[in-house]
Amino acid sequence: MELKRIEELERLRHGFRPAAIATLFVGESPPAGGTFFYAADARLYRALRAAFGGGADFLAEFRARGWFLDDLVLCPVNHKSIDERRRLHLRWLPSLAGRIAEYRPRVVVSLLLSIEEVVGEAVARAGIAGVRHYALPYPNRQPSRFRRELALIVAELPVA
Image 1 (cartoon, helix red, strand yellow):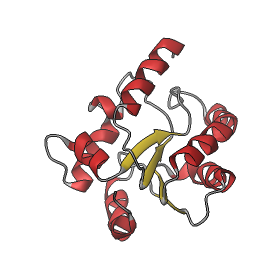
Image 2 (cartoon, helix red, strand yellow; image 1 turned 90 degrees about the vertical axis):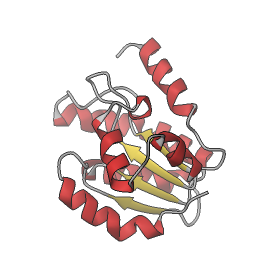
Image 3 (cartoon, helix red, strand yellow; image 1 turned 90 degrees about the horizontal axis):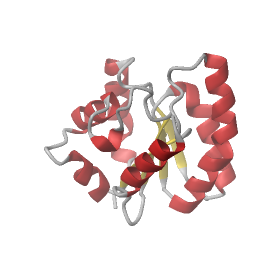
């Protein structure tokens, strides 16, 4: 993905950033297919909207709750090999740690089990005491397990 497209997506993402981030959701990366959560056209957007019972303006509702979705890697990796993805996860870990330190969330939720360890390390490196970290399976790969595990933690997700 070219740098200009990454910058466009980051401007769009940060247009939905709440003043105070209570819960930070972390995905692996923007999809390679050109969709994006904050463009309201990605499968992850539809899955989270359905899981939370979101209305027509789900992104505004998401922000109003003090929730924000960021990605571990800011360029698409879902089309790459497992080894290449893992290499990029580790390369982007310091960047995510810096963003978490800036956001200062009370809870971080990884939205893919394979990034749980790297996101957990980023949370630790961010140096914010008391941050809880949960990991869920990717909603489009394991939808029933995602809904079941989300139901177990939804009461623990702080809102603004």
